Length: 438
Ligand SMILES: Cc1cc2nc3c(=O)[nH]c(=O)nc-3n(C[C@H](O)[C@H](O)[C@H](O)COP(=O)(O)OP(=O)(O)OC[C@H]3O[C@@H](n4cnc5c(N)ncnc54)[C@H](O)[C@@H]3O)c2cc1C
Image (cartoon, rainbow, N blue to C red; front, side, top):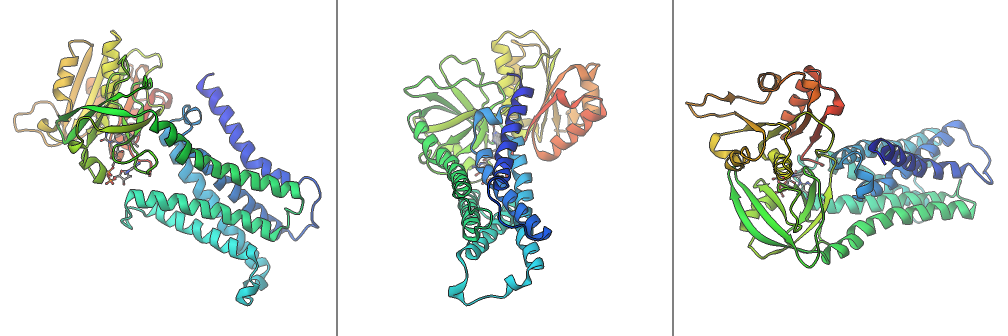
């Protein structure tokens, strides 16, 4: 199945899951109609809940689902559509209060109906979810703490929403409708159970062993890992996996890293090259050889494979890791097509894989253009940052004939995407991987 067909199928499945529970509400016996705004507000609430529940599916890392788009696009969609759903969920009570101000009059505590308590808990969780997701860095919440609370709040929000619907019971008087929505909620939470319990159980039986720890230039460490007691998996160059080094796969400690080794390794060996940045990555240079680790993968749509006259790889900093995998794989395959790597680094001595790239030139038609932000005094090469001018100076025309791959810091990627548009390269000719999901 082509990516276009696969994408269309998954979009149809998504719409089916969002719309069918809503349409089901309108089937069978119906309560007497209320005023327009009350009905409209109820529709918003139901829609918001249906979309929110499906977020568990979007983030369940189903390879089949994410394959046509890539993980970063799915997470981007998850963020955007969640905000939309949360908007619906919040507008729902606001309209109700405007239409029926008597709802605002607080009864005695013990007389507050369960449906109202559930609604309050659900909306509160939803607001907390958004605040923590949007301002995690500003609030200085560590990633793992945020991730755990994100899951807990999402479960509370969805369960609270369901209890509110059942407690209010307006549209769910038919037992089959109640069962449908309860079944859906169980399904959504089941997806979470699959990701957090079932999948780690499988990973536990497929561990990897660190067989080499290699220091690279630019505060980067390469872990060489071999499958233990299983054949490993096959990946496409440019893809990534979630790595768990400390603790079991049940812990929320998996971090995403691109594979930097050739995809042609026959023994299932994989390498990840990791730059020391924060808590987790700074511990990587101290990982002992022999340590048991877990890799969940492969994931991502950032990979060579389309027909191309030449591959243009544009990397900034540690964004070179997927490019290394592409270059090594093309070299192993004896590919004859030219490859140009435009590679932005800070300083000459900090260029990760500098010597490996030089060595690879002997096996591949590879041209490497280093762009240094802080070059030495005698540097005659490109200086500053990757830009449309750098591209013009080093790429043959027509620019639209090549296949482009971009990975690096967000600002660099924005600049390069704008530069490629300026050079008339169509969107379908460039592929990018952003190193931040959250
Ligand atoms: C698809 C993909 C491929 C990547 N490939 C590489 C690579 O090959 N080499 C490399 O050095 N880096 C890579 N990264 C970046 C790497 O995942 C982060 O630098 C690393 O997780 C930071 O963790 P930390 O605890 O050391 O830093 P922190 O300072 O704790 O985190 C820095 C930022 O990294 C992100 N992050 C932290 N923990 C996680 C997590 N568990 N899951 C998702 N994001 C997290 C958050 O946005 C956080 O703000 C990749 C990222 C993605 C999304």
